[in-house]
Each structure stands twice: as structure tokens, then as C-alpha cells.
Length: 71
Image 1 (tube, rainbow, N blue to C red):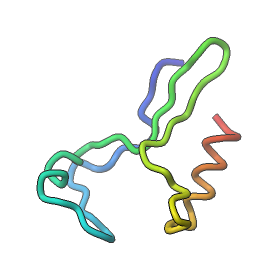
Image 2 (cartoon, rainbow, N blue to C red):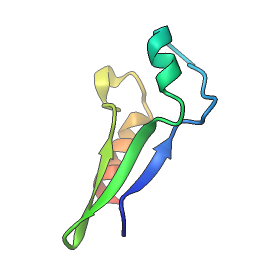
Image 3 (spheres, rainbow, N blue to C red):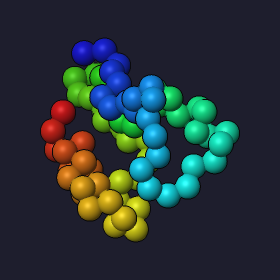
């Protein structure tokens, strides 16, 4: 398996909640959210942001556990 982008933002993604500065808003088009790469006989899944931060996003627990357990 090669390196892979598992989840990316859409090219025309709009903010749903919170604040995004105008400089960052222009740079988040097609931004990586989660990725995966092979290492030896295994693989790593990495998340760009912390989905468990302050328990803000309840579904973040599922994203984290899926990244940890499943490949």
C-alpha cells in the first residue's frame, strides 16, 4: 500500500461552525483531514486535528477508535 489521503476537504468547503480567518479559509481548499502510510508490515493512520479535543465533536470518538483499531 502506498501513502494515501483518506479524508480531504472538498475544494469548495465552507465552514460549518466556529471561526476561520480569511487567510486560512483560502488555504483549506482540498486540505488533508486524515491520511495513511505504510511502514514495514504495518501502517499508520494519522489525523491532522485532535478529534477528542474537549469532547466538542461526539463523533470524534468513533473516528479516533476506527483509526486506532481498523486499517
